[in-house]
Length: 260
Image (cartoon, rainbow, N blue to C red; front, side, top):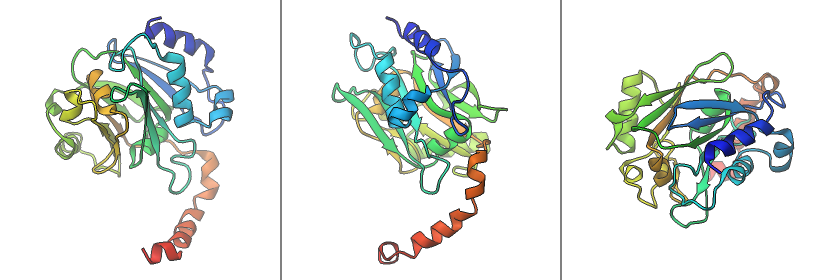
């Protein structure tokens, strides 16, 4: 069954509205046709696997065509933020999931920095990417009334750049500041050339490395995903925000930190 039919069948089973106050949408991105569709992870799935890596696995299980090969554009690349990411102190992780071009089995890699949190703050818990972009592409997620507004941008100026050069160029061109109002995941030249051990950079040092996700992202002709201006406040988190500084002081006072 083609990937678009699998996505359509899955969307028919997914709720169109959030199932709990802090839930973000799952965004399905057809890079070839430049089409976007959104829905929400079923509550039964969240209760069973909690979201993040677990929900990524659910989506991969539902969308995987085992008759293909890992780098086929009909094999999805899935980003997912943790259930508490962006809500509680030190919860800042996300997972990247697919079929590994490196090992031929599961691709599941975890990274931090700001992309997972900014993704959730823009109203998305998961990104499901598939299809071969007609040219090298950047996804931009900007402020929207509910979920972030997603646009497809040309990535030609950044092709051939490695991580630090690309981060400098993107920040300069967009007039933003990393960790202040911008976050990004991107591939380097290794990913562009489908090196099977290549990773996806999530910051100046953070990387989704395990399983060759950079090659998978390169096989979709997706150079990077930029999230701009986190805009979403979770009402359920507001009463607990004043405790963040107190918790930080407690952590900094522990012997493990003081004697590190």
